[in-house]
Amino acid sequence: MSSRNRNARGPNRNSGSTQGEESHLWGVIKDDIRSMIEGVNSSNDAMRSVIAQDNYIAKSKDTIDVGAEEQKLDNLLRSGVKGADLSKQQIDALIEHITVLRALVKVREDAEAPATGSSGVSGRERPGPLSGAVRSSSIRGSSVRDKDREREKEREKEREREREREREKEKEREREREREKEKERDREKEKDKDPGSVYDFDGAGDSPVPSPLGSHTRKLGGGSTGGASDRSGNRDSLPPRGGDRDTPSKGDSVPPESVVAGSATAAQRAKVTFFKGQDVVFKPKPTTNTESTEWMLGKVVQVLGEGKSRRYKVQDADPDLPPDQRVEYRTSASSMISIPAVDVELPDLDKGKTVLALYPDSTTFYKAEVMIPDSANGKVSLRFEGEENSGTLQLVERRYVVEYRN
Image (cartoon, rainbow, N blue to C red; front, side, top):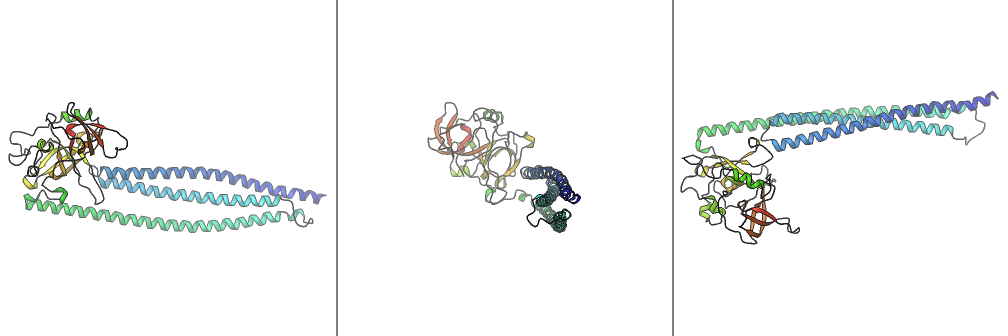
């Protein structure tokens, strides 16, 4: 009888111990899951910070300390790598705990299942499978830990290789900065030797010979009939007087309004110059061979040089920035188009004519087709490229409609 009681108590005692381990492991697993989720969210936040910093550097590289901002980006990248490694370790630990829990559950289920073999097995022998399974689980756990250590060694090697690559990149960036400084010093020396070479050419897009007028621009804050007219009306559209060096000399230019009106010959277009304070359409030079730029609304803020070496500094008319923070571009007459003054009377455009026009609520000029000329209210009804199927027509102020050019 006492033997029968011991047989009955043996499995229950072992089963309770197994269930206690299962309960403990399940609590650990839930904590691991919460830690893993927090780690993944933190890693995602770090990645968003990296992307935001990279975009900020790309957009503002002309107005910021690029070196300092790149250092911030480098710190964010390093922090992100550490966070990703920590998340990987948390996931590996979670997998290991789940594997052990699964083994314990399997052992308990095997121990509680009715015996399928001989009925003569004593109660003292029943704990045998459990202890064997626990030993097997312990062996598997040791093997898992060995694998984890190997994986950790590999991850540490990979992190060291990544740090070495980052050091090489930083050295290359430093060498590039040194090369840029050397080029700048060479340019300064050339300027000191020959004052006439100050205004160097940048290629075909920077030629001093202007092309026929026609254009594209960028985003303007108000509508084509409201804010755009108010802003352009407040600009000083008359050239400086009294011998200002920025004022075109007689015989060296043709009035920009005559070119916009379409009455200028090719020879006249070749002599068009621009003056300080003038509203223009300009096209920035691409920074790479694959980049394309749009015609943008701007204002001439400085005239550099004379004759064939004449260049201009044009300020972007971005309404979202105060004037002292707007980007300035160096360009030539061939990349600029005059915008007539507010009080200049312009002829009607033929229906169906292809033009460049300021898109409403923007400062960008796009290709469009004249639909309804309307000189009575000083506006032109246009259909912009890409809106042919929608049937949408846009009203644009006549002075912001210019001759088409790619």
